[in-house]
Length: 163
Image (cartoon, rainbow, N blue to C red):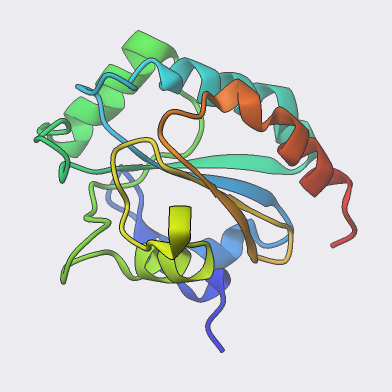
């Protein structure tokens, strides 16, 4: 059986990162974009990361250009924008696709494990969020409209649950 920890992804600096490195952590995995109406959510994601990281919580940002070309830049540009504009310090990864034949295997897994409204699997837009428990099991998918602050109670519950 596949686990979230079986996947690897390229970090924004180009190094390969095993998701197994995050074993035992509560994760919030988000497809992000810098030219989207939801881009200000970077501030809320960073706030969650800072509030909960010492308790074993990690936000993982995956830039994606599949929705109206809202993440056109190269990795260095994305990293610079996130740092300079939103003081992002949570882990960012290289640009990926989340839908279609070239969807990253991690997103293929997440979409199946935590379907959206009415069982839909496709990611509808940037800033779709997946909360993952300490065992690597996806708990819930959140729509792009869900502000990061609205996830606090679910994050608290996931952090309090036994691993």
